[in-house]
Image (cartoon, rainbow, N blue to C red; front, side, top):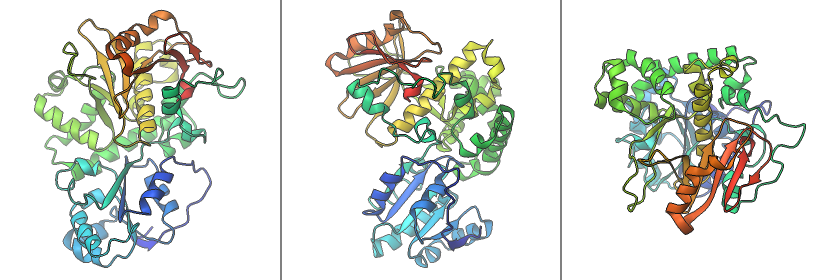
Length: 419
């Protein structure tokens, strides 16, 4: 595809309906610029092309166009009426030029931008289009999108309206190993075997480090990034210790923290903060590490369906990071409204995930890689309920079954399929 062309038709074959489509359409009706942030190859370009009608299309992955835009960003912006600009993080200076032309013509829906780095986390960008641009994040495909159904997890968790039979008999297997290891990247899921999917994931990670890291920050030890990613994958779901990770790489803790920040901006990893309220002084404040796609994480730790049988701890960490990613996707429909964290006190009582609503109401979630649940699995959730009182909505133990079952007093065992 050329750098400048009419918006090409998108084949309906193999396309999944994206839940972000409706919020994007709404934003285009009242906002001059709309940015779709998200990792490379998660489906951003396909989605914006579906929404853009006859908009001209430009991609800054075209090296000649990129050089021209960097040389004269305002001249390029002035020539545009309405346009899609793909991979805009490659020329952050263009955003200031777009601010200038938008202030001269504030028609809604003029610019539809995509970025494979979290542009709002880059200091030179954060204030460029304040009040002029709506920002949305598109992550890899959720299970709800793959199954072409609404993502109603948050709604059901709030109302405790779980269908008794979450997985209809004879339709979807409650064994989710294949789905978790396949990840959510459309291209990765098109590969027909686990080996081919992992080959795609390895090539994807290598290309990302070689090409996109430089767009986000100056990295002195670029050769260490693959090792850092592998170590981060092995620490998934654990407390984040920059000194420990740095010791394995020969880097100081500040450098590790900076490099992980780069990986966060590229939507590869995310640090999960500890949940706290002012009166709870016994909480551990160290964040945990999670990936935003379990397919990439499982590739980095070389986890296969065969190894899961004997290495349950590694499977448990991958399953937990998969749940983390699915929760992030459910929350992305409510940008800025919900807060996700984990709970752990000095008595080692834990809750894997806490979802906190804008009204500070709390949903606790535990992950159990088993097909059965018993009362002792709710220990951490009951502690959380005691701490939060009337703000506690419900406590969920996600498990590998097919029925949602009440354990009384707001406590539920809920199948992974509900995600």
